[in-house]
Length: 231
Image 1 (cartoon, rainbow, N blue to C red):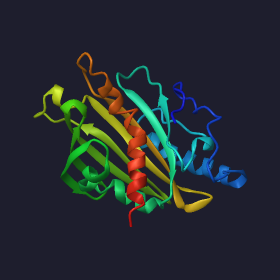
Image 2 (image 1 turned 120 degrees about the horizontal axis):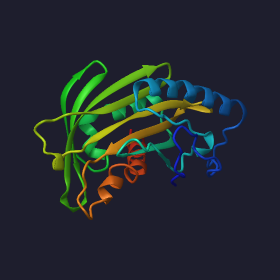
Image 3 (image 1 turned 90 degrees about the horizontal axis):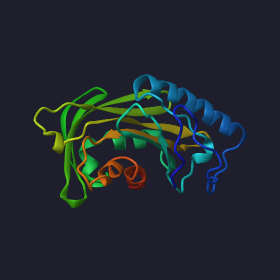
């Protein structure tokens, strides 16, 4: 289920569907709000600008909630997706840092190549396979941060002089943020924040913009959920 567009700097709308099988009330709501406020402060410092806060009502194990973050000064689009996954933070963080395994479960990911990896930073060449035979290639720098019980993996685009503009994307930044669910710390609140600008899009291929951002978010989080369920 997708949320309404968010004005810049505003919190997501309230009134989303209630949590299926889980009530975040009283101390749990306060604990979640405090935890996420601290995590968002770190994300704001290290990741994209205008990091939104989100209401606990958006959270569910049954669905992925997606909201657009309006940033008129930027040519691309920004979306924020949240869900709850029945897996601890450490397991989810390990999955998203297993870059070589992305083609096995990440939507539209045809190939990944680790260019370099040291400590918590990696440089990865990505190849996306889109409908109608469209291929996009680009290079990402990914940085992992661990603070207390939380884990964040942020990324930014690195230039590749060997790629023509039509074969790559203009820009992307974003992050994964994993936080333990206060009511059950074996489950995680998962946030996926992404800005994507595919660059010039030929007439009739405007769907590329959505498939690289809005449409991909629920599929990406559901792919992570499925991967986490494997032994």
